[in-house]
Length: 385
Image 1 (cartoon, one colour):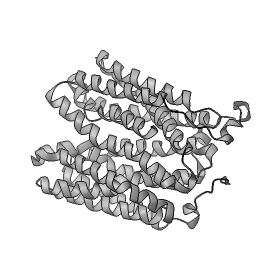
Image 2: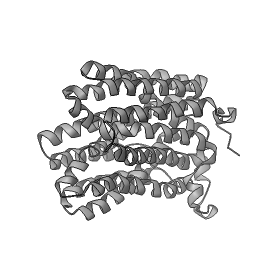
Image 3: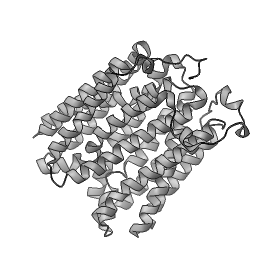
């Protein structure tokens, strides 16, 4: 139920990502203001997560999950009512705050019901909802925007968000005993301490590298297809989703049996190759081949990294670790869009894909050279030092 509900959460949100920039541009926004649309959102998400991680150390899950889902739905409905660019930027900040809230508590609620011995498989299934949402929804949003208008996108996004809220309300949540036994008065809030979980810092850094490399796909793939006159770009998203779905049970069990090292290296290697094939594609054939490798690679890489982050963390600190993981994703994609957005003025998009692909080689390097202690997974009864 958590997996299905989270799919609707991500579908609702991801429809807006590729369609907000042209919508804001239609309102008269400058290029700098359009860039701030992503920056303000990422800022809000990163800033709120330490506070949510702190709350999750002593709070039950249900109320936090439902507050986040309801707030996301409310923020979505406000977009068509806000026609002033400055107000839209402010709305994006608050939307980012509630996105940071929701993703952190939902991911923590999911890992609460998964034993450490099957965390790779369990979070692999949970991550499948994220992957499918991130792949299908942007394509759907682009199609609706091209054939209808932004208001229709908001209506559909709100419906998906409403379904997510109803599903989340039906779930019986589990709160770890270690969390129930602690009161708020026993814990002091520390921003840095709630932003970073030291035991999982290394895999979170690797996640930052991976999502920085992925950011060019999110930002430029539609423009790339238009430049190459490849009308079947939707095949990249479709094949991506199919491959990610088919391979996820295998890679999840691989993580549980052999750990993250070999899996992360293989997935990053496939993603690196896929980005080069994509950059050289002149027809739908290259798009399909890139989609197959990217779905198998990146589609399994992010859940593997999340499982790696969470497997090294005690149950009480998993809210903080989960927040750090999602902040790494937001920072990686946000910074990538900013850096490569500037480079796009001087370099072809195909070359941007090639340059950003080298960050997956960094993922391989940092995984290969990591100390053995970075691959030690906690047992159920253990806590990190």
